[in-house]
Length: 319
Image 1 (tube, rainbow, N blue to C red):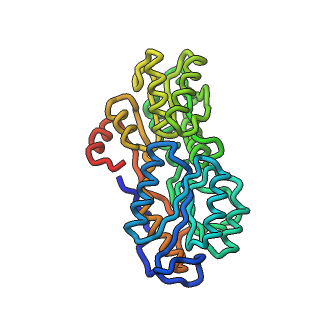
Image 2 (image 1 turned 45 degrees about the horizontal axis):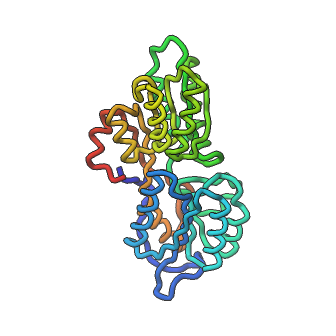
């Protein structure tokens, strides 16, 4: 489903300059500098497409940078945007920490910053205008709550392995936290191994192969995104086990490949994390460029999927 707004009333506004923004174009177009994490997953690819298409539709000039999952690349890109005197800077931080210096530089240059998809842990909330994205703790919690219900009749230990996202990133930290908090309600549920697969399919496969060799009895896999889950699925199949049955698989994102695995019975549950943030981001860019107040936190509306609901949703899936 397309991402929505939670009662924020965001809409396109006048392209006027009331003191925010850096330079702008001679043709009057708003110039947006955007630094993307990379292209590590199907989710990220869909997110990039949404942003590029929405910028074109909104008449915003987009200066796009791919950080290739490196913080130093993002910091360099943001400094380049400042030098180019763009009107607004937006970025999806690779990790949560280490942004204060460059964000202060943007603030000193009077260029507003919008965080998308991932947050930063800065204590100074004046360094950015707003954060647009999902509630990652909630996604982890919903995943854990499904497992609680699914295993409520278990009388013995339920062994769980966890494929974490990129170390230090907001979704990895928060999804781990939410899941752990939820499953704590049942002492039979035990995470016996947890390691980063860096949100990639190859990483998920490699780490799952290690998990399978080291742990003879694995009942559940919790993967922080679909791509790692899909990689793990290959490792599980190669080990002679039946994904979705011998090992139940819970993932987050709900991109098309993940939804297909769910509909096919190879995954068991997915908590959605919508990548279609482009239209909302462009509305925010127009608002902050015009000097309007925006909410500090804008949460996307999302749902969860079982095998049956995935079958129903797939024909109209946009990503």
